[in-house]
Amino acid sequence: MNLFSRHKNTVVLTAVLMAQLLALAVQVKRQTAEGPVRVIRLVVVHTLAPFERLLIYTGESTRAVWSDYIDLRSVRKENARLKAEAGEMRLERAREQEDARQARRIQALLGFKEQWIDTTVAAQVIATSGTETSRLLELDKGEKDGIKVDMPVITPDGVAGKILAVYGDHLSQVLLINDPTSGVGATLVNSRLQGIVKGTPTGEVALNYIMGDESVQPGEALVTSGGDRVFPRGLPLGKVASVSMGRNLFLNVKVKPAVDLDRLEEVLVITAQKQRDPDTAGLGPIRASDILSQHLPGVPQTAPGTQPQNGAQAQLPAAASNAPQGAVPAAPKAAPSATQQSAAPKITPSTTPGGTHSASHSAVPNSVPRAAGSATQTATPPKHQSVPPKPLSAKPAGSEGTRPQ
Amino acid sequence: MKDMRLSYTSGEQVEVYRFSWPVSVGLPLLMVGLQAFMPVRLPFLRIFDFGLLLTIFFAVSRRSQVSGLLTGAAIGLLQDCLTHTPFGVFGIAKTLVGYGASSIGIKIDVENPGSRFLLTFVFYAVHLAVFMAIERWLMGQPVHFNLGHEAGVAVANSVMAVFLFAMLNRFKIRD
Image (cartoon, chains in turn red, brown):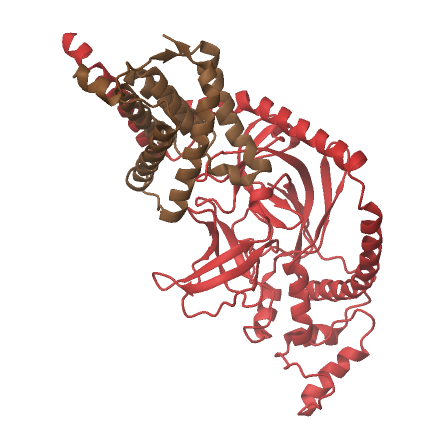
């Protein structure tokens, strides 16, 4: 007893440290957040959440009053600018609609299963982890809003992260893509190389597992590959910021995320995805020659105004030009536009009562049946040209179903 | 030994303070909550570790090693709750900081801004070293150290400590 009181400070320090080390060792070994740890986390998160919610809503209300009633100085000027911008966008839209029709037709030919974002839930970010080492966000939506673990979290710009934990009826936690423990299957849009996008300890994003002998250009866009079974294929992830030779024969590819991960205030949680055949109604009949053209080897693209070198090259574009509105042109020219459509979808959620969104999302191919896959392989164009990615899971064409998360 | 202690504190006896229960419990909750909330609107505030600053403040004010280490452990575990890392990483780091800060608080005067700045700078480094050691050797995670960034963050936290400690002084109750 005398010994204890003499060394009380050291004994207490050792005891407290040992208890925490022991708890740490048990958690590292189990690799799960179940049991008493989850209970403690639940209590703390639920204690802090109401205050954070209150602060967020107070701030939002103040900001709304300021921006809607007080700060209206530049509204006229901005209105004129937006009108001009809307006119330009209408023209752009007309051109893109044509490309979209073309893309849907090709998807139908290849037997693509489109993966649609069926429903999303809009959520407000109410807090972070408060540390630089743990890239987490807390959302004001939870179990009652249909949120479950591993659901993708996006913004109109692209992927933000996935649901890590659901702490109750109206509280959940998001693991951002720049956290070192996160991982997203990714595809480079031009080269079609696949890798895994992970966060770094400094909060940056990197594309891993790209072999050193591959060519990756800065500025190349990255989209989700769908291989992780969490994120739908084709959602924008970011752009290649820099490329250097890394260790272990892999390239060190740094990525600039499509989403500003430090300034997220509202996000969309994808609560259901739907698979279906592409909608080709109103695009005209699919002709046998169109299907045949998909099975033929690729034809090099000729610059406008240049004479084709041989008869075979001259005939295929001619067939395409004679085709009805929306018919498929020769494969090499059509394929890139098809992939571009699926590669960078625009997410335009429309709100329904209760905060649930039904997102109209451009077609994202998910899986290709075996037959279509073999057709694709037969007509494989050079590597730099876009080809539909290989199937992850072969499902019979015509089947349709919602894939809840 | 007592003479030595007096010489360190410029001839004055060190003051020991205590805090009311609402302050002892509410202040850490408020500061950790603010630390989690503020980066949503102002991301650069993520660099401030209010939990660490509060641990140092309580430790040097109370000047009791047991109290300091227990306060550090409690604040650290509170922070652990908001992360997805195993429970205890911040807890261990702040336990050691609490113990160290209170040990120094017993020996030297930490009431002036200069010593507070230095103390925070040193304990930020200690906290970082312990944290990285746990991540690297106990959890097997890769760690990244950028001297320039960490030095900048340490200075920012130290400057913040000078102002924050001055504000928190009003909660002190002389023992």
